[in-house]
Amino acid sequence: MPDAEANGFNRAAFWRRAAIVSAVTLGLVSPSAQAQTASSVTPESFQPPLRNLSGSVVFTGQTGTQAPPGSEQIGITLSGVSIDGAFPQMAAANSAFEARLTRGRIPVSELFDATADLEASYAKAGFALTRVVLPQQTLRDGGRLRVEVVDGFVETVDTSRVPPEVRRRIESLTGPLVGQKGLTMTELERQLLLAGDVSGVALGSALAAGQRPGGTVIALDPQFRKVTGFIGFDNFAPSDLGSIAPDDLNGLVLNSGFELNSPLGYGETFYGRFSASPERVFSEDPRYRILALGAMVPTGPSGLAFNLEVTSSDTTPDNDDVPTRSDFDRQSLRVIYPWIRSRAMNLTSQFIIDRQRDRQKLRGFDLPIFEDRLTILRAATTLSYNHADGNLSEAGLILSHGVDALGARTADEARGGTPLSRQGADAVFTKLSGSVMHQRAIRERFALGLTGRFQTSFGDPLLTSEQFSIAGPGELSAFDTGALRGDSGWVVRAELSYPHSVAISGMPLMLSPYVFAGAGSVSIERPTVVESSSENAHAYGIGLDLLSQSGSRYRSSSLRIEYGRGERDDGPDNTRFSLSGNFRF
Image 1: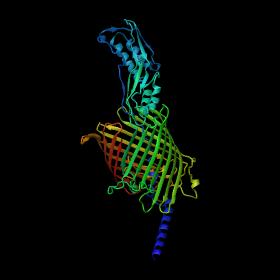
Image 2: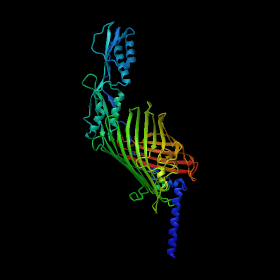
Image 3: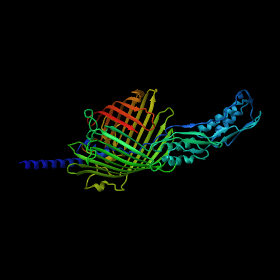
């Protein structure tokens, strides 16, 4: 009798699992059952962000010419002005200078003031190293004034205080400045900022007069760390993957990362990222685990860099109704070039080749549910602009095209075998994604942040890893990361905060309470019987940011606490308590 019961139980389990596989394959299981695949919780890239120049560019020494005491009481009339070495592109400023000094009788002091103003015009036009001087001469009433424009140049770059690990790379970036005639502030600023972008470097610089006429010495004073990194935690992942819930503070998701800066002395960076739920983190079926390793290798003085990155992601949701396991692997090669690098504006492009494999299987019988293999070409461009009033705007576009090459698995190849993840989708596709961001101060007390993203698949269904999600931190954060997915969609969020400095036990902190609201929509091409062709959602709530103010260029810590409510057209509403923290060293 027990054997019969056991056999009956085994048969029931078998048919139950068979039914699940059939339902998933035919698209008869709710989208939430597939929303926790590894690809849906894996970021697009773990590439270290571009670092802005720390420190300042300081001009030292006197510029222009100062009028001698009492010269404002002496008058003179000029018959003309000769400007030796004048730049043709500054013709308008040169003519205005001559007209100013030949309009009639003028005080002698105006000769010096006008010369200083002409030098300022050259600097404003970008020729920051150019000097306008009054050479030694005897000038009488009715005489002709002689002025010299000295084409400034970088005489040398002092790298004596640069650590040896990054000296070679920094010298390769600043070397082209030496001896260059007609050097503009744009060119000077670009190379200094690129030098400040070297991983592990916080660069300070100063300009001083050189030994030769018109010569300038750039003195570099960088700080450098061989190893940088961070540790942190969050509960952004779905609850079935081990995140923090309001009534269950177990299953914390931990994040960590490191950068090895210039170990070979060429300005390269080797980096790693690791995120996991502590539950079964080192088992064959981890609840939630993401591992990424990469290298950033710069080449030449232009800022061109190559980035190679490999990512492995695994999820095993705690879901007895549909017990699945998913893994996602990606290999990426990126070519990065900064077209514009300045304090005010930055324009950078990336050309990317991604090879991806996304698989999901049913646990127990080890039966495959789907398998995707993609080869994707991407072209990305980002633009950022720092406004004169301190506000910041950013925008980006990414065009992606899947190709039948390098092992891609098309719909034709999947026919009769393990299906692809989406009905009607293929490894050959085209999509366009974009993002915008704007941050501004409001009456010096409040800060407003606006963000938005969109994606269009041009009317075609996409495989799971290429779909668009509007849920997650910084967007509709009241929903689990990876939820609310579609082939096309958009999302916007506004956040109003009140940042102010406080001291807790003598430690300076930036406290920033905020309110937020967001809305978005996704659409699915060729939906299954249990999917909606489109869904709208919105979220709102309150939160608190706590940021350290240590004054260190390397060390920082942050904590974000948020409580939000999300509402959607097709599905249950959600109330979520989010918590995240990060410490960088």
